[in-house]
Image 1: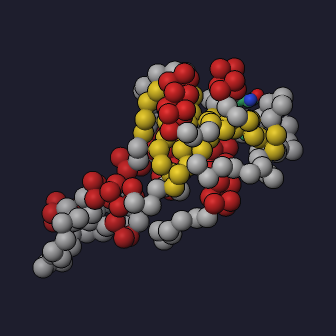
Image 2: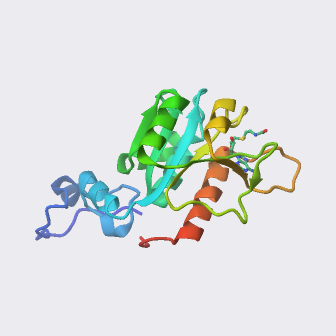
Image 3: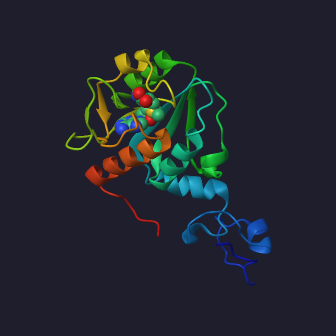
Length: 201
Ligand SMILES: C[S@@+](CC[C@H](N)C(=O)[O-])C[C@H]1O[C@@H](n2cnc3c(N)ncnc32)[C@H](O)[C@@H]1O
């Protein structure tokens, strides 16, 4: 849903963007952010971001990254970390990356350095030999969930870097689900365990 020009007189609020007030707001934002400047929205989200981080390996331009960024925005996670190639397919993000902190790490050791320096455990999410069910696992409140990419899944280097690998139990014929879908389920499991946070209807 979009909104047209704001009726005058305009509210006296520095968070509001005169361009949007004049021409209307066609962005996909919740009603409470209508007409707000992008910077004001980011600042407001920053006050309530969850201590959850999400990281994804990007060695082959994984098309799931956009969808993961959008879900990460929906749950207001602290940041999304892209590991490997800097460029990623933004299409599925539907511009939500503009309201997120998206951090690039050129390789796995760089992600591990960042996680160590912040004292944040890396938790692998993949379905593979030795992985344990996410259902029943306790996710740390401060952590980074690390996802692999279509095809290879988590790299060997990533599996070595994480404290544990958790899988979403499956019962069909496919070996795995789409990484964007798996990421949405894992993020939802984290918020289910740690509380939804302030709701933005
Ligand atoms: C399409 S999977 C690829 C690899 C998978 N290991 C395989 O053998 O087919 C891509 C990514 O999605 C996530 N994923 C897919 N299905 C999953 C599941 N059932 N549990 C946890 N993660 C999953 C993981 O992060 C995985 O690295």
